[in-house]
Image (cartoon, rainbow, N blue to C red; front, side, top):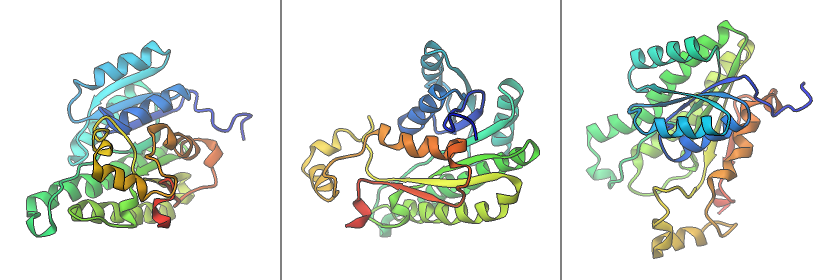
Amino acid sequence: MPANPFDLTGKVALVTGASQGLGRHFAQVLARAGCKVALAARQTDKLAEIERAIAKEGGTALAVALDVTKPKSIAEACDRLEDTLGPLAILVNNAGVAITKPVLEQTDDDWDQVVGTNLKGAFQMAQEAARRMTTHGGGSIINIASILGFAVIGHLAPYCAAKGGMIQFTKAMALELARNRVRVNAIAPGYIETEMNVGFFDTEGGKNVIRSIPQRRIGKETDLDGALLLLASEAGAYMTGTVIVVDGGFLLG
């Protein structure tokens, strides 16, 4: 094991859903740890700003258009990043959507969009990454699950189903790919504050959520950094099929 097992210098990472929120943060964390990072999203206009920010800090980033629901888009994006940056070693499978409606109002299209992106799309992305990793010595796949893969709340039935499925396919892929030196793990975040939800936690409903968390606070994006770097690096070399819950104790309640 290297002197610093968390060092990722020279490794190539791909982060899906990198245009905002947790995906953007994960990309920046990996770049600061030494990775060459491919920033992936369906629309690349927002990625240019993140690409410049990483370059300004001395890192290397590449924006690629990628739709996880389309296998051809996945393959083309992976070809481009490997031609430009080198062999893919780390995948952060982060792209996801949610549609908030009562279960009796969720339509077939709602189900297909949420499950198609969060579960089928994540599987397709992991499968393509794993095929490439097995040809050049292995790698690490990090699926971004959710505490709603373990617990449920109202109005998010397809999302809960998709994240529960993601946890199970993480374990199934880990079992099959262990001998190929491809590790497959997941992070299950709890309530994490981002620019998309910050206003909610100032409302009475948001304050009720905070009171339900044993640590009595909302998680910060940086609270996920330790789990991310552990699973991406040699520090987690003997970990596969693991789901790391980062939720301030929420599931304990």
